[in-house]
Every structure is written in C-alpha cells, then in structure tokens.
Image 1 (tube, rainbow, N blue to C red):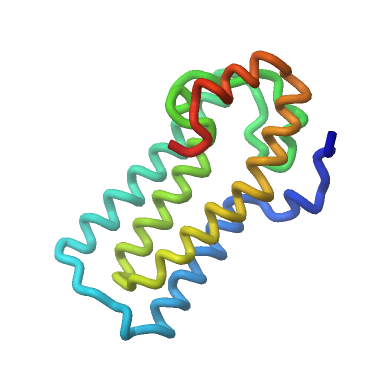
Image 2: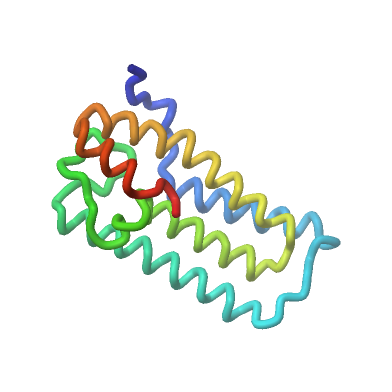
Length: 156
C-alpha cells in the first residue's frame, strides 16, 4: 500500500484556498471580457461565504467534540472517525466549506472564468489531500472507515 508522504500534503488546505482565491481574482482582472452582470451579487456572494464559514466551523466543532486532530497535515494523529454534524452528509465539510467560500468570491468577482479556480481547488485537494487521507484512515481504522466511505459521499 502507498504510504502517506510529505509530497502529497506539503501545503495546508487553507493556503491552497487562499492561492485559488488569488487565482480567481487574477483571472477576473486579466479577462474582463468574461465579466457578467449578476443581480444581487453581494447578497449571493455573502450567502456562500457565510455558509462556507459555518460549514468549516461546524466541521471543526465536530472534530473537537470527538477529541481528534484538526490538523490536515497530521491525519495519522486521528483518534476517531467523526460521523456527527456535517460529517453525516459529507466526509469533507471543511474542504466543502472552502469551496463554498471560493464560490462566494467568484460570485463577487462576477467573471465566468474565475470559477476555474474552484475546479483547480477541488482537483488539487482531492488528489493531494483527500485521497492520501483516505488511504491512511483506511489503514488505521479498517472496516469501520470503509463502511463510512460507502455510506457518506466524499464531497456531496
């Protein structure tokens, strides 16, 4: 089995989210011809950002209540499979919260191409964070984690 390697998780997910937000902004600045009018742009952007922050916080709270690590760079320190709170409907609520925040930023930017930054975030986090985490958790928790994987989706 492939082991958890530092090359797969060298950059913390919040840093990746910030880099993707900057990428979305740069795309919007470089491609003004793809800007669009979005009625109620600020409320829509605000909704996604607030919902994303709430989802992130609820995931953190569930981890704290389970007394397991919240450090995405140390999944080997996990002591429990968390199934409460948002973990009932997504295995990755904190990453999903970051996606929602990025969607809010893209709505604020109102540029069709800026959404590409969300795609980059999802692809990167899936490949270099989630998949290695899942391998490690499968090894650590065995059948209980495999059952959880089968009953709850990775994203939504």
